[in-house]
Length: 589
Image (cartoon, rainbow, N blue to C red):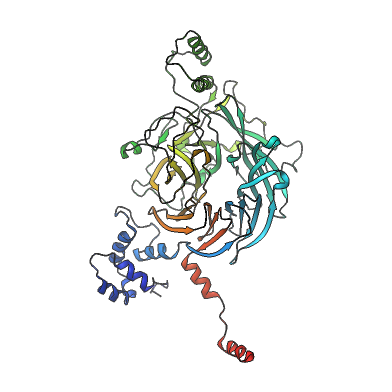
């Protein structure tokens, strides 16, 4: 034990890492290791060791909560959940998703075996309940989320309808007695769904307008649809958004803006979160090659508000008629394909039929109850390559009022997005930090400078997964992409890989049979967690970040704890008394 009461690093570890110091040879390293209690107080030595061992730029400051470089080295060595302590094998098919309750006492797992299982998070994790969704014509369960007071569980799955058509469905399960309270259709199924507050959840629906043009409608649903009075609304339309070029809205989640000014960890240590305000709806293109271009966001409109030449006040109806006249008289050059023609007509139609975006998105009052609806979308192809953000105002957070939502003018047929972030690649995962300040995004990049001529033929995607980090207060990317994990499936087979964020760490699955853990402050990979197949999902305990779960196609859920936690738990286990052991041996003889 050191003077501060914490356990010191083992001699073998100290011996290994000291060899990274240029001015310490093997012999002196061994001598120092035998006097490691004195070394632990050499702050300069530990600072030098830290930067060299973890290969971190010296421009990166020490973690703001650390009191010494030795303590920081100890944190990264001793508190990473990288020791496998249990393997749960109750599922009999691929395990797709994991989610903890907010109290950390329970967690849920979803699987291709079409069950959602509820687990009790104790020292030895045990199965508490299992719900089979096949009687409701589900093909499998894919996602779950506890509401804010842990009284309800949202379960999302794939529903098999007539003629084997597949769509999505959301079920709400009571945690009091595990009864099914309500079911809500959800289309497409990879919208997943999410809670907006304790009793209301968000689902999606998709309406086809043309071959590659559609409309996504996001609905607010009361969780107690089968119980509420007939005189009370149980659904209300939130937003109606046009989709171009075969894109759709998927993967919805909600961020609480009121928590931004008290983050658990500030990531932009160089600029100290210098805010930049914009009055338009910018698109940030991460495909740029230069740092200057990345640092300066491109001012582009969001998908539903494409730029058009100035027609001198010509209305959308006149512009659409003029466009048709030009086609009939052969004045449109070069000749358009059927796909290009549909997209052009859809753009002209929506031009003056869309409600304008919120212009003051970045100036959200931190004390308000405003929330952001975040989802994946696109404007060039069907693969999700953009993140859309739409503000939800307090009066929209209840199903009270008109079923079709707030009153709007007849020409405001669609809602526009308040903000769009372009990832320049296929998005395969998203997760919020616990304080909802930062959005982490898994993506597989497109080739630089690629051109998409056919929305049904997206560019090839990289095997390396990039983990981007965005500050939702400033709408800026705040760190270089984290890398280490990989994926191999092509665009048409690409599936979601769930990630999770704790106070200090971020973890993700991968197709390379490993889970990965990074430090959020230093941007370094700290651990690889072995499975026998694809790792689909990871989940930190919300009350104990030294506990991590991983779910895999190998049908298992693995439980990982930190070396420090394992050591403490082993110390607490009762040891048999020597006298009792001797007596038992004598009795046997």
